[in-house]
Length: 190
Image (cartoon, rainbow, N blue to C red; front, side, top):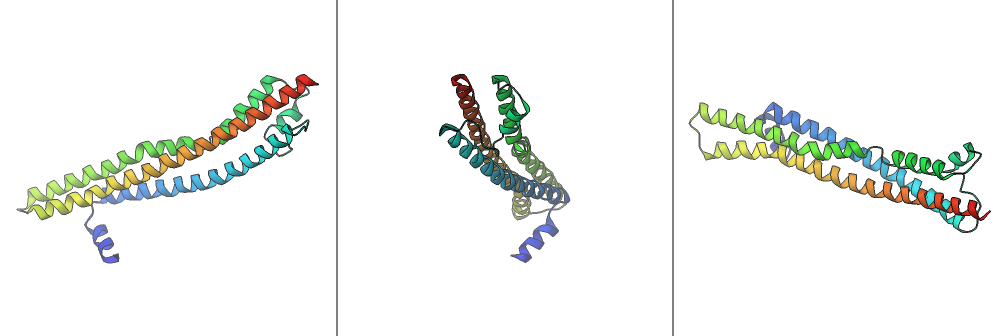
């Protein structure tokens, strides 16, 4: 395996290697972003769920760990506008990193395709300079398609990570909205 990898490195076009390097950096960054954001959002969701449960069980205020708590403490009057602002801020914080995942998901196939096109052009140049057989064409094209496969591989993970984090952000936004509605309902009762 190591021998075939070193042969691939030696025989590949420098642009293909550059493309695979960029895609590797993309993959590492999206994986790190996903892991970090997934666990931080999961923790945040659990805090908001506990706060909502205590609020629904006849507590008059949200948990001190809730995202809403600082907004309530800063204002002397609880209004719908303040709670809407809180929900907007929570949604903004929850969706950090999603645009980067979206950009990687949409650009990585094109980066891979660029590497493929350059490698195929290099293969055609080699064919034109020598009287070669189909085996040279097959080797050149198969090496070139590795860049496209790499781009698609990274795009699949970036899109999947984006969708998973988007769902968590939506859930978090719903929890903040439910707490806001419960607080407004309790304020009307009082």
